[in-house]
Amino acid sequence: MKVGLFFGSFNPIHIGHLIIADTIQDQTDLEEVWFVVSPQNPHKSSRSLLHEFDRLRMVELATADHFKFKVVDVEFHMPRPSYTIDTLTYLSEKFPNHDFSLILGGDNLTHFHKWKNSEEILKQYGMYVYPRPGKNKTLDHENIRYVEAPLLDISATFIRKTLQRGGSVRYLLHPHVLDYIRDKKFFM
Image (cartoon, rainbow, N blue to C red; front, side):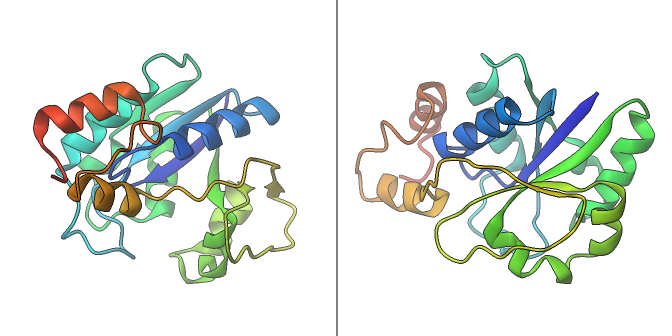
């Protein structure tokens, strides 16, 4: 089975994530997209992150009605900070009949060379790259596939700030995610 891994802190998951995942799954040979909730990104501060189980729950709520989406908490059980290559290696050993690839925004290619074992990631796994607003870098590699997808400029930071000021994010979040945030009084 060909699986695309969509890593993120998902703080919170928003419709941009869902649209990109759905578009990439629909327009490529990927049979499923697995959302890998990262408890701690080695390149980001964890101070503003909700608890990992709350972020996992929001991803579950947002993806529950899509049978080709799966949510995994594999990095919750790994040393922190988690590195993509370690997660890929673990998943490949646990699911030997799966062919894993990364799903990555074009803006992330700018710093991809700084990732732990980035060359091995490209060689062993490859990636599907979607466009992002701003700087998109391209790398010429046989295991990189560029996918045409909507150019969305939606950020979790914008959503958190809007919620903090009491603004509306009605069309930026899955309704069940918005209900969860309101029930828990997150970002308010």
